[in-house]
Amino acid sequence: MHETPPAGPAEPQGASSLTEAPEPLGHGLKQRHLTMLGLGGVIGAGLFVGSGAGIAVAGPGIIVSYLIAGVLAMLVMRMLGEMSAAVPASGSFSVHAEKAIGRWAGFSTGWLYWFLLVVVLAVEATAAAQIAHGWVPGVAQWAWVLIFMSVFTVANLVAVRNFGEFEFWFAALKVFAIVAFLLLGTLAIFGILPDTDPVGFTNLTGQGGFLPHGWEGVISGVLAVIFAFGGLEVVTIAAAESEDPARSVSRAVRSAVWRILFFYVGSMLVIVTVLPWTAQSGKVSPYVTVLDAIGIPSAGQIMNIVVFVALLSALNANAYGSSRMLFSLAERGDAPRALLKVSPGGVPRVAVLASVAFGFVSVLLNLKWPDSVFHYMLNAVGSVLIFVWALIAVAQLRLRRRIEREAPEKLILKMWAFPYLTWVALAGMAAIVGLMLTDATARPQLLWSGGATLLVIAVALVRESVHGRRGSAQDKRK
Picture 1 (cartoon, rainbow, N blue to C red):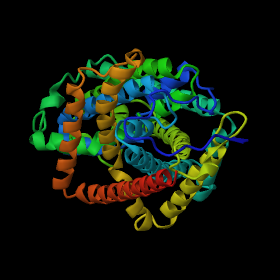
Picture 2: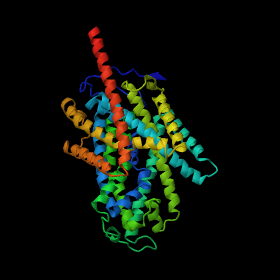
Picture 3: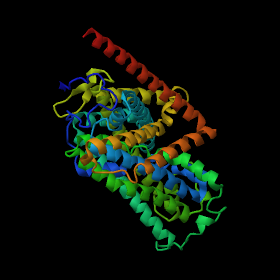
């Protein structure tokens, strides 16, 4: 194993180069890995299971809710794609925030995102273990957690191509499941399936109309589904370990951005068209309810398998993404230097082990105190994603201007209608934060996450101030 050179003192804001030093990490990810990661990264258990909660509050209007949330996610993904194609880095948006806003922003974004991933990892590992325990009751739930965590730890320690292969096949299965669902649902709507009558589009306007709870229901639906789009960021982190980072991430984002919206909005359109929205239960996946209704045998077990794969996929991606973010923080002097050790194959093994170790701790807290200690941890990161997205948008606003001025040839993927759509995205995020403050259910999570965010930013500003004073003292001594 070798160690990368430590990062020097932070350069003045705006002075750091747009050209990143070559990454010491491996370059084992291929274009097909990134393309499928871009498609499958945001297709998770939140869509397959959690969408039921959105339907309950919005009715058929959930289509509009997903359209609003999906457009916002698409804009963020396009911004990320633009910056990552121009300045590929293992720290992705954390590096971009540092270059565009200042070191405190890079520090805050990186650590908040790392904490988010390792805490959510515990939820995914526990949920996957619950499904596996249901299939094989003889193996305790904690044993399944240990098995899953160990398998993906080893996979991430050996070579980055292992992560890529796992995610390729996981994403392929998820995409296949959604495409098959859309096809079967469409055939059911028009009565083409055996033993089915055409349902047409009456369910879209029956049971209280298209907006049974009005626009307030649509807005509540947005709050219920927006965080299901988390995961789109990992493809830009992974791009730094591909053979041609700039072009690879550009192609992956271009191929994924519209398809993701189609999968989400298309799924909701099928669900609320095939059955009345009142037929859905928040306790059962809407996908299972629809497949049962159109006569697909063992629909529950089929979706259990898909959800299980989605959870393992997210677990694998979070282990990968958290380790690369931690490594990037260490490169810039914002995390311990010991994390800079890289294996001969280009894997930051110490960063992987550190991230997974905290993941194990989170899992234990989730198993032992799900309603107390872990509940507070989950609340502390529950809304962090919206703050991270906001910093991504601000960074893109500032970095785009700088790239246009200093290296316009690097803009091989551009944000649409810049800067107007970036401002639209920021306004959308501000609106979501405002709505969460007025929602009694979402408010505690937002306040906890806001407190955690302010705490990390305060630490970052104090560190920057201390480093600045030390730098000034050294200059005087010279």
